[in-house]
Image 1: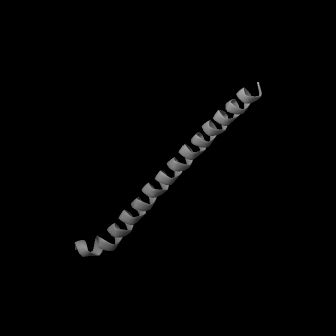
Image 2: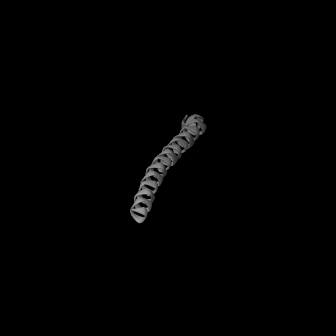
Image 3: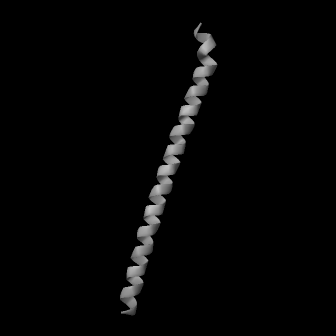
Length: 52
């Protein structure tokens, strides 16, 4: 009986893994955007201090 559900469970586990990986990628994109924004602000302040 459990042999009938094995392909379904494998598909569900694989889909769950894909969802987790997608969430991690989205989180890394958010962190990259925040990091690039802070880096841009740091360069702008540095540039402003040099020309003052």
